[in-house]
Image (cartoon, rainbow, N blue to C red):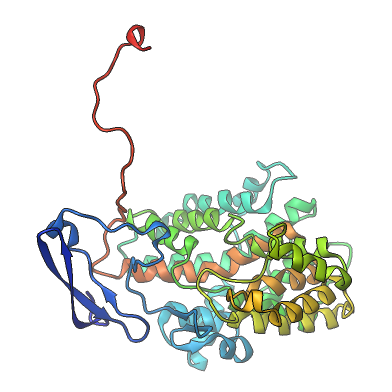
Length: 433
């Protein structure tokens, strides 16, 4: 228990003829937790919690979610305030260091990130080893893990200074790697970062600039891109973050840990949900087809993608901001009457007025509008999860940093409920029936 968790009494568990007093701990907000670390020693029994839905695997001061109320806080700041008033690099500083930066701190932090956006020249040869039709996420998994082969001077995980250097390198180089994955995928030459551009400006230019003409970044798209990064910066102990922490608990270097997080994020139930939502809107086609689709969902013929969330049982606070970004991007690109956007707005209206969905807490989540927004910005669906990984890198590395500084941290080792054969003797192959 760290100094931040406070004792809040005890809970008594009776198992057979044994009675165990378990400490109850309170965080700064949210539900109390029952500390079961001594349960096995006292009772010779484990807990069973598939998906870890009722288990706190760590203590963290980064992100707080109240799913019932639709609240998401980063270091105490509501996500809607950060998305409307802050910028991504400021949020990066907040997650990494615990506080919003002063003007001088921000200038120094932004300068440091900017000066680390370049990749080693030899690193570009890694991309050539992939087929041109390789999925950009497969390229991300391979290349991010390969960073550890280039930056030996920041792999000592027990040195706080080296941990900080690795964090900056990952945040700075991820947009460059992501843009290169996109350029390689579509067969265009790589575009190097420019130090006079902002984080989001640089990324958009590296994705969409071509040698044949000058490229001017639309300020509306820059704001939207920056906001999308903020909305995906961190989200508590989700599957990919838990993967990063579990990999890090073994002492793996930070680049390998982030590569593990990217691999987990690639799953369609995690980072691929916005692509699924966009495909659903395409299948619906026009608003006239919505009533039939809604009935199909109720009859379990179709899945309603982009609604509902593992944690949120209310309107996802990120979805409201993403909807605003969708309006701005579609206006900037002249697509206000985009058929998919019209379908999305009508589907949301119909679903939120239908007791079948509201009673099941099926409200729009961040993925519902992000696919439309990214598509309007010019990104193919294969890049959606890559952008998610780019933004989430700061959350992953902040969580890793926090874990490495925790004196109570130990290697992850979940238990199991074994249901296989009990002990039996080996039978030679000629005697097996």
